Image 1: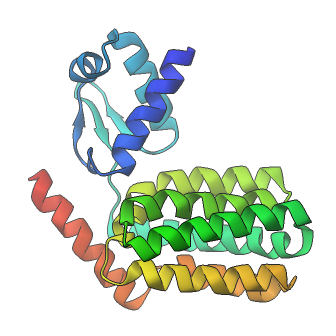
Image 2 (image 1 turned 180 degrees about the vertical axis):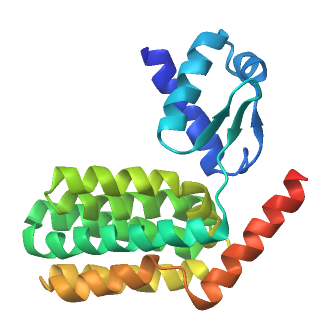
Length: 220
């Protein structure tokens, strides 16, 4: 892929993550080319890359759409994400350096500011940085790559979750416990907290299904 294709991939991915393109929405190459003032070739390359990441589905002779996931598949994906997060957290509690601790605390404070402002969009990006600090702190590059890949696949749905009433302060409180566990070097507690932080169960499952129903209504 060319550098332009990589930039376009990131731009389209961000449009998907922010909900401007919803699951099931068509991704017309011609319209995207006009939107970004480029030819269709780099757009096509970007869509192929997004398809390899699971964010886009390319249908023969029918074009590309934003990938959709059935509720059961989403729950399975969040189950795996929870375990990856738990593994990263367990290792981070054991392996983080003082500099890593500083990066984690800075990311946590940025989440605090967004939470206090009630800004779900800002919190979404700060939340990504917070989790990425834990992935990096695991000092296991392969594990971090797997966590980041699935995290990206789930971006649109994680963003939806943050728009649920009272989710921001709840998410931040969970972060606070995770930070304290990591700083204390308690790997098992960190793993347990992160697993529960990511798992979609009970009311959070109902909220996710409701959000998916809203997307389906819009797509129809």
